[in-house]
Image 1 (cartoon, rainbow, N blue to C red):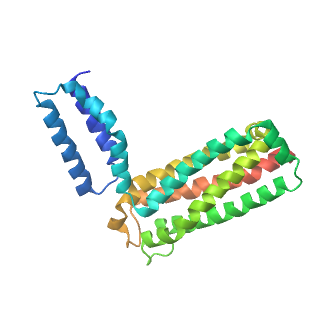
Image 2: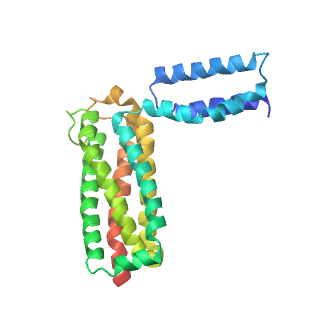
Image 3: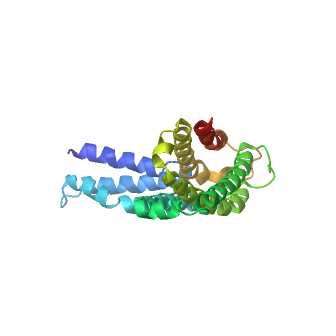
Length: 250
């Protein structure tokens, strides 16, 4: 691989993981990488082909560097989603065993208790998200800094999200074939994935510059678009969740 292509890949990756940062911080990091590239290209002792191996070896460091420049609230949401994915994988591996599921399904109280908890935490989770999105849209709490609203709401959103995922997986595993064949469940799943992606993009990009618009009564357009998408997607998730049962018994 040519040195020019290796340099282009390195520059592209730098643009990706610095996306959304304040302009001065982003420029400083890119200048640092450009300096490293120049030294690599002009070092007579080292071959140019070492640029890509160095890039590959530094990917984890780059991600950690980016994580260190996230707001505390953003790190909480990234950690919550990562934890949720690991929990789902572990639960699938354990609960998908027929003997374990048979034991749970034989319980008279298992399904109604899990479903009740699931509905309760969905109400809490979506209710809190609506408050946060309303502030981000500039509809309410306009005199309260956006970061202060997030700091008070997200510590409650994170555990509610994890409980929602766990109880949802338990309900799904009671009859995965039936759920998978339900069109409203598929709609719910797609909306849920899109909502999570929207949340990650918001915290990786727009919220990284929250100090620039923290006290603005009307946040920037990118923040408002993200909040509007969030409201729409969580509404789809909530409505589709209720329609799953109606599709079965309608």
